[in-house]
Amino acid sequence: MKIRSHSESHIVELHDGSRWRIFPGDLDLTLAWKPETELVVERIDDEASSHALVGAGAKVRVIPAGESWPVREVKSILKGG
Image (cartoon, rainbow, N blue to C red; front, side, top):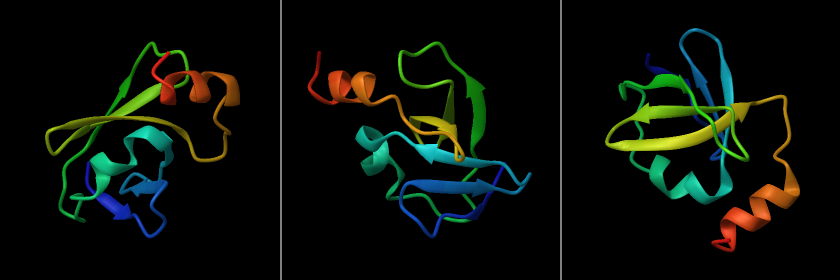
């Protein structure tokens, strides 16, 4: 599925209308994304995330755009713990 909008670095909207919030530690992996980048939404089992966007050689953890990241889990992951 292609990107419809990625105007905010932490939010991506796909052509199917779904909007995803990108995990803070994965933002650097999205820098090369362009509108023609093909992404696949996958369900994953992760302590902080429910889904991943896979494409352009990367797997980026995401949650639906309307949700908030669980603070404790995010801090733990970003600290490497």
